[in-house]
Amino acid sequence: MQQITTHPYRLEKKRYFQLLVKLFFRRKWYLIVLIAAIIIFNISSVNENSFARFFVIFGVVYIPINIYRIYRWVYAKGNDNYFVESVLTVDGAVLYFKDIADNETKVNITTFIKMSQTAQEYLLYLSQNNFSYIPKSAFKTDEDRNYFETIINQHITS
Image 1 (cartoon, rainbow, N blue to C red):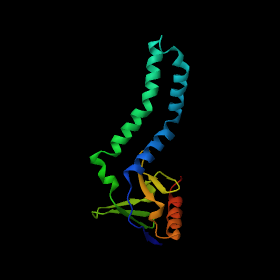
Image 2: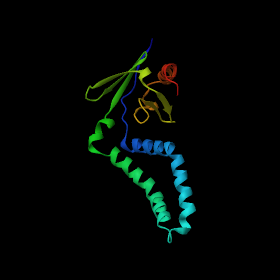
Image 3: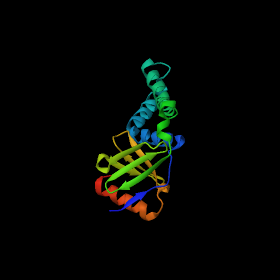
Image 4: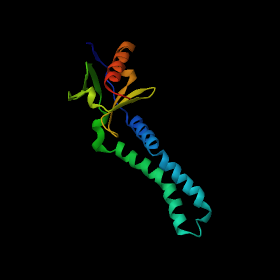
């Protein structure tokens, strides 16, 4: 069994905000389409019907309000612990996340329910809305990254 350790990495607030907004749109696409349809259907009767006016106003402010809510959560002072520098060690089916203050979290890979990836990072989900961020650039070699993917794919169905 191989053990690998990554370079130190950090989740930037801007990137976290982008990921959360992207997840919001992916999870709420059907609602956004419905709101757009309601706006289009009711836009002509906004001046005469207060019910139509409500739906048009709601539809126009729904997305910006949710994006603002995500922004406030990401940039809140109490969430700074999400953005500390960390190192990941993979030892068999166990992941060790160690931050700059030497706090270590040991997580069995089977605890994760899902893995998704982008061109830049892996997202390991502990629940539907809670994920661990691991950038692909943190791995020291391509072999380390391939080993990580193999271990993850053996234990998690993506």
